[in-house]
Length: 309
Image (cartoon, rainbow, N blue to C red; front, side, top):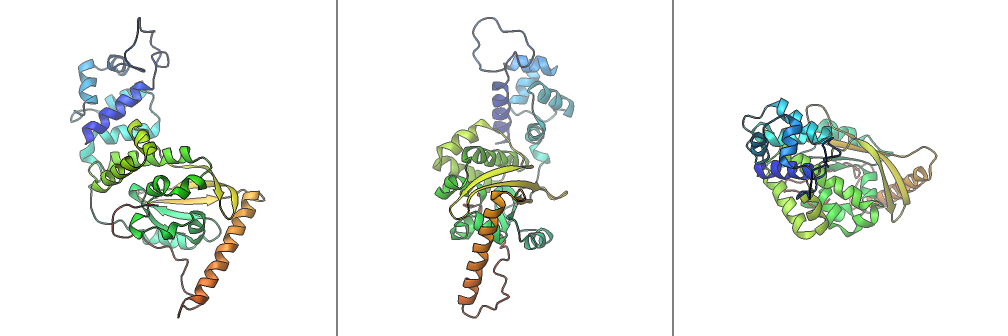
């Protein structure tokens, strides 16, 4: 429920800011809460205690942008958290929810098809994997062995045993996946598929359950990931997360390597192995022409979110 989401988000943000960090005088005696009290947030934001309490309880009908900005400043929210707070405070103004399966946008699919020398993938909302190129399939091993309806990054991260071996820094990346789902949830507050996905992962994995309860949010932009690939060995890949203007629910993820680095050599080896196996599969396929589009990214199936990063 949106009311519960904003309550839990503000409560967890209060808990991580100490009075000293907020510039307040130390509170005399023992404190019952680890961070700021509601009264202290109200004072820092310049609103009455009753007003802030109503906000934290999800009564946001008449809340203004000025108040939300003041609360965000008091709680020392970053830009992603501030956007999340605004979305939680205005659930009626977010994206209408739908049960229609998301499809890869044709233009982005053509872009993906033309990226041949680095891994690339297209993510939709809920972290559904809409399409991948041949090197991404090779990087995320056993991906095509997953049921078509379960190709989802969060599912892959928490339910596929090989994911914990593949990511050298699995806890950090896994927590980012949880944060992305929370950020998506604030913009799609009544999505039944997200509720189903979060419920399944919470029941199946204690790490997901603990991190989901912390209400952290994460917006991917750029950075690097370290992998331990069973064929290519150790890889460090830089990534860029590109979200088209006007279509925030599809993100193109590109992975690159430093020229001349051991990771570049490892990626070339992986590409060569992938190409040789693809050629073998084409020649063995009954009636498959040499030019068959075996590397063409496949759109996500019509059924709900599944096991996929």
